[in-house]
Length: 447
Ligand code: GDP
Image 1 (cartoon, protein in one colour):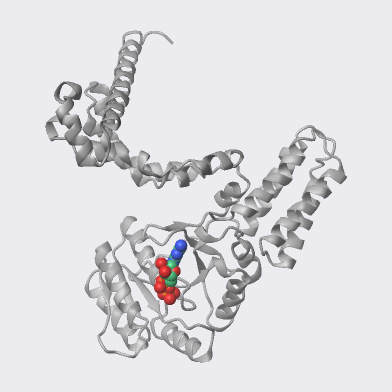
Image 2 (cartoon, rainbow, N blue to C red; image 1 turned 90 degrees about the horizontal axis):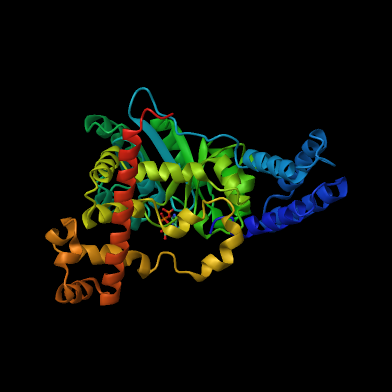
């Protein structure tokens, strides 16, 4: 998980502080020493770590935390604010041109995740109501063009490519008018990478840049390469000039050294992060939220956003209507389960809860996204429409049907029984909620 080991180290340092009540200068100095070690172990650039500690120390002195009662809270807040700054301060959004199409050019070394990210970004923008066009300009790796086409097909997003054309500058210059003609408002260019930075690569990228004048050049870097990602970012910025970064594979980077150093070293913000291989594994990067996650202070804003995206207005209105009518069925239950699933895996959601770090060891033992949590959906999907939409499914689902449903869903009859019992309990709660609402209406003259 992203920043896992760093997060553990921070929590250790804070645990000691919290246990102390009033703090003296020595306590804070000790904690900061530990934080400095944690940053260095996380592969944070040495100067960046040193400056970080200096700033926290200065602020702690400035805020006169020593001897005050909630000193540890104040120190944690200072660390969170500084960590937010280190990660880039405020969120850095993508430019949107007032004269479409907005042209976004992706660059990066081979294997950094450019092609995958191009597709992820297109999907993200499509979800936000844009109509993107993907452009396959990585002509030296034929697999990259096919890869982009496959992803584009899967996401129902058009891909511009030219068979047997070895001239990326030509492709790109023809792709932009193609986007205009086909009413695409955003062009995402997947350029070629190399194993190492070299002049030929840079010349080609500069040539593309001078031909299409992209609104943004986004450098894709692999978080797992640590300080190499920072070095690559500096080199690309010096030669090409970049506007921001997309940091991939943060899901596999427990240390987080690149994410924590890259803004301070290059001055360029991380705009998106890649958190899985799948096409929905791209997140806008919010420094404040990530700082809170690292310090185990939770990230409630992301939970709310995920919920808003998963439960669109129509399904929320439908759910409200069902709750009011009291006619809650297995079909409604299924819809809710599916919306919840859209919010992401159970383990990733739990990871956003404040204070969850303390329970990590226990939670690791439970298979949160395992078959037990997918079973209810499979069971309901094996039922008939009549069973799913009946207000009292138990009347219809007798023993032989239970056996059939268990077989169809790859579960056991006990599992079907358990689901029906759970459902009856939820139904009861819904009825009670409805009754309470009714009472409230009758006594509405009460304050
Ligand atoms: P390119 O050479 O820069 O175009 O890289 P690709 O897009 O082909 O990606 C290289 C590998 O990294 C592929 O196996 C991707 O599935 C994987 N990858 C890309 N982004 C992520 C990410 O955010 N998380 C994980 N776990 N894998 C990723």
